[in-house]
Image (cartoon, rainbow, N blue to C red; front, top):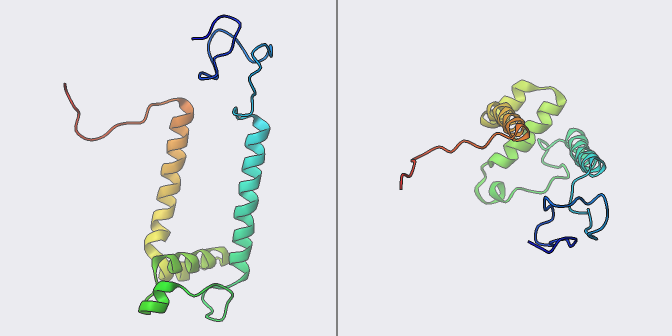
Length: 140
C-alpha cells in the first residue's frame, strides 16, 4: 500500500482514490473504454466480413483457384479437416447446406453447439458468475 496521496503503480485501481481527479498521474490506457471496445468490434467485424467475401468469391472446390495447395493433400492425397472446413464455409456462404454437409458434417453439426456454448459462457461471465469446476474435489 502506498502512502496517502500517491498512486501505487502495482495496483492500478486502489480503493482509496479515483483516477478522475488526475492527482495520481496514472494513465487510463489500460482500461477498456466504450470507444475502444466499439473500434475493436468494428475492426474484427471488418476482417471477418472481408474473409467471408473472399471465401464467397473464390471457390476452394476448384483446383485452379488461388488457394494454396494443402500439404496434407499434396503428401497423402487425402483431404484434411481444414480443407473440408474451408469448402464447407464456401458452401454455407453460397447457401448450399447439402454440399456443406458433404464437405464436413462433423464441423457443420458442432459449430452451432460451440457458438451457443460460447454465448452462454459470455453471458455467465457478464453476470459475474464464477466458472464451475468439475472433477474430483480435494478435501484437505
